[in-house]
Length: 633
Image (cartoon, rainbow, N blue to C red):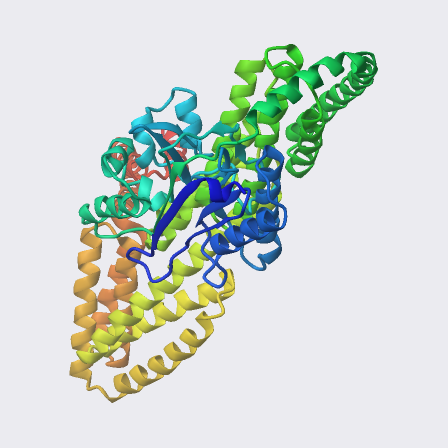
């Protein structure tokens, strides 16, 4: 039994950090001939089900039932965990990153998806480590980002492969690695590697002799940072103190020689098999190309579901091909793999838009555009579909900005963002997405009307408390109009109850006004006049006219005819504005000049009237006066 003839020690630490709930999970099982170690980090927000625990439990259970150390087995373990999360998800997605390590106590291999990591340390150095399936890692591979920036780059959590994702799930699987005595495996979640770099990891395991000391040493580094918020963190260390050695190794070599001698007997039969495979390979390649081309056509037509389906089928054909990596067919296979990534990003973007997760949608479209440009540059493919994807990326960005500004109460900027989103999809005739943006605009107008009504009501309450009832009445009436606008124009159901409340307050204030003396009422009217004068001075003529009208209503109640006449004049002045009054005065003066026979004087007055209308921007009236002036001899 291999386990009895090898020595492997395993320890782990898993803590929730600053949170009540730990979304990480680690478990392992060591059988007689092989062992399995699995660590996962939940990346969803569902608090009812623990995605990491479900995934790790599924892996360990499947391994126990069908143990083995091979790429096929690893893919099977992760596929079972992936299917478990999809089946357990109900109204919310279950998603997690995972690393699975398997060993037969002589060799080891691992598989990963997401940004949970595995390190193999040998002789004080990092011999191997997993790569994240993130946009940041892709940028590092493309030499667009330095390796030391990965732990804090903004796209480090933007994953393209993880358990529970929609579309095709493709984990990374290592080759078999021969173990040596003294090897140390360290498995960790992002709560560890975001804080500890490679140098700190090597310092933490320097001169350690047990798996437990590795875990505590790394934990000490995390806690020494004294961060305000500590993320969930899980550390697992596997010490390979002694590797299994096969006592029958010499006999195996002898068997290999015998088998080699017999191999020549079957060469002719194998040749026939290869010919059959060649024909099958050719058929699969041709079908792969056709499926890819159909997928591209779907992309151009914005049929992203159809495109993803075609690319998935094309990739299935690609997986059946046996091609050289540097050959044309190998290049075509890599191109299909990239198209399949585009399909996955677009499905993710659609799902994000349906859930109003606009930032996620923007990132998914950005990833799709990036891969599309890579295909265009590296493989010479036409990329007419990129323009439409960029339109959707910009749409998602504008919707994200609009939602953020709306949440901050910045309605003007929010409305601009939603209008930009709606106008952006006009060119591609996406009525559905325009309607979503238009609905947000309607919601903004409704919220703005409600906010204005609340402000008028608040000001009215303050005026009512001061006993300034007529002004309070005006503000309550303005509040009711704002609520009525929210209800009638924008369908806000909450506005009706606010309108009913304003009706009650208006009746109460009106009763208080009826009880006021003429002297009290005229003090309020005088206040309206002062506010109207101030508005006139600021050029706010409509607002000034409103104040004068309010004052006039009070003077009518007190039968103050002198003030009523004064208000009529002020209302007239506010209605037309200084420029209008000046123009009319000059026209009347011109009529007087003509009556006296002073034609030059009449022309001069009319010219001044034309200038007044021009300054006001009333081109139509200016033209009419100019035409009349041209008739004077």
